[in-house]
Image (cartoon, rainbow, N blue to C red; front, side, top):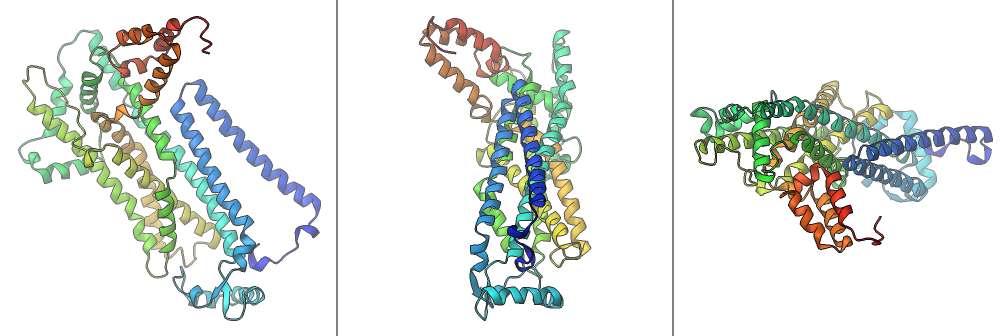
Length: 466
């Protein structure tokens, strides 16, 4: 395909070569499809519906990338025969024209192909060689995207599972009938001394706190207590850690998708790749800057919650962490997730583009630039991926529970299904029995099997409901 379309056509290619290539490609594709199918089946067996939906979303995004590649293949002849004036083809180049003229052999081959397909003074809109290299980029982007999604979920899950022993410790304290909440005193120390009460100082402390011990045991237990006290007061032994894992899975389902505005950013990203601007190098700092701002904001919210808890000390109702959306940007906790989504996608795209240039043109390519630009971009990409997946995303999953976001996210699917069951049963006693079983949908969601059993008993005979 490259090099102006030279080489033997399909008509004069040995049949055994075609058969071998097709067999290898189909085998690899079938193996990948079966692996994803078995992974989805495993999620279903373990009742991890959020991860299963995330896997389905990932398949959709891969299918979209494959469809884009298919369109490029089908219309490659049409695209390569479109001609534009030569002066338009010599502006906004990723490499300077002197570099292209220096490679005389490749230049002569290109000139020969151009003279055959376009009138004098014009050049193809996009050559077959460029289309072939664009196919390679789409493949590398898909591979890097899958790897980054898997690492995001793995690192985030590892971090949240580390909090399991904190959940167990508070349960042991409850079983031994220990009174008081010593963790609240440690949590209120977040408010700090006189100097930390200044806004600038608290932001500086929050900025550096995200790099070491972003979530401590006192933070986890204090926020857990505030959450249960607000949403599940009749179930003090509620497994908050299991709920956090479900929350992470639900957030991961949103992170996997590639929204239209992310594709728009990709187009802009490709547009500004102009020689001499070094814009790719500077854009690699964008996800790092946004990540540090998001991490500092989440840590600052914990500090504000600690200050508020310190002010309620001695309250007749007891010291508590009060839940509110007011501490988040524009009073919208979900906005933080959009920023995390953009950070992870933009970072994966940066790394994919870097590997594409390296695999297609080599390290000494003019697009790759100097080694001094390459190493920082790789280091920044790794730091952003690890810090965001292992620290910022779990921190977000915990801190956003101090808002009211749960009403639209984790429990929306459960309550929606519950209401449908009530309507299908046509029996008023179902509503009454579920209402009496718990005063919070959160408590019901923790034990869905019990709720389902109650509904099953309340269904009229012969209803035909499976």
